[in-house]
Length: 282
Image (cartoon, rainbow, N blue to C red):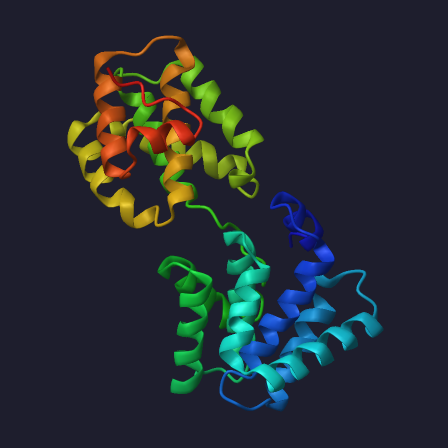
């Protein structure tokens, strides 16, 4: 399982602070129905004691964090503590992790009451968690072997599809374009957990598929649902443009694709440039 120290460092966070707020998120999950049940308390202890996320956290620090979080919840109430959690975790990756932790504990007895579900929905809204990550958190919460750390907080398939569509615009995937895709996947944190064999299989299956204008059009229409956050859309745009310019020239088909992609992602020219790459339009 990914270690939380490495996870935190990827997203510019203090591992100790992230552990503290992760514990508070679990307390929020346990207290979502207004009560702390024994099974939920046991689940918190199980997560803390058995997962690498808390490796190196001594019992005194753990007890202090648990006590502080419980007292804060009792003193302030659920909603203020949720807002405190959101304020302490500005990065989306951190908020996904907190939501997963809360959901895992709320599911400790194998089900969610209407009250728990309602409060988790409130937690989702305040933290800004998109539906795909909510569904994944609920699914993993029901599996005792699932890691509390998300395997990914990035829309990996959407990123890959955008890059493959960009590479197919000239009718064939050039070696330079393929090398650019592989280089990005190896270097960027979005793809840290992507298995090399899975990547090669995905490219083999989809590179030819996106030579069809119909397939590209269909995928462009579905992209907004898979890229719910502005930062995701800007990342996708940046990846696509860098694939297009990898061979040193831009064809008219590639230019038209980038124009369609920019409109699909709802990026004006200024936002496209802020994403790190010019819009490349006349």
